[in-house]
Length: 368
Image (cartoon, rainbow, N blue to C red):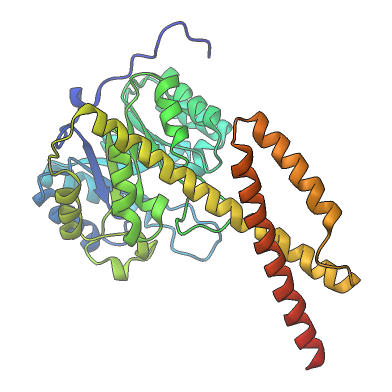
């Protein structure tokens, strides 16, 4: 979609109540039954800080046999809750039929999940289903770290006639170990804001974290990077939740979290900019640590092969080739040559230590 001018997205404050200039969206990962939904919704409404109730009516699961939501049965419940509490309702849709049912039941906001936004064919089908309705849409980033897929999903929905669009940063799937469920990769939502000026971008700390222990620190980084709001999963009894119990918090815990996050801080502009830069540095440090884990996993595999083939752990020629190559590449990139040498020395020592451990453990197993 060639653009000469920015897309005219409707500003958040023109159609949604904000809390401290932020949009707060909260609610259960999945609707389990009427009592659970009503109890959670009423407790959230009492906070006077959450204008939008998120509710997973249909739950796309990786494998069959797990709870997949109560389905369309929950839509009349949501209609009644909307009238009783004044909350706006947001529901995830993964098929055109989902979207059609939501429109019939006065759902205020539809959202595309990460498994849907990664599929341009399905996004196009849903766009056709909502065409001309003007319904508000929230669009999560795809599971893969592909900015253009995310942009494409937003453009398809915009072309269907919706100006009320919110992008949701929920992190990206990765194959390497991380304490987070999904990798934040903050540079991608920041680049999205530059590519689509004016689009509101909110953060979903629940899905990035996968564990309530990390929700606060992720939300803090989102605030430091000037995200436009938060989507947080909340359940009146998270320990009994049928989906993602570890990443949900109670409405009372949400209130405490928002108090901690949104307490006004007296910071001048340089301090705010420092906070943004430090959040990005934290992100890069996490990526470096995850890459180191992958690197040393490869070192372990090499150690096993060396042991089987009776190859010496120390390979001077290989070490010299690596040192020359990495020093040249690092220097070209602007890194200090002395720093490169020190880093390579540390990596080599740790690699040797890992392979020596493998050698000893393998020998011990053979002796036993």
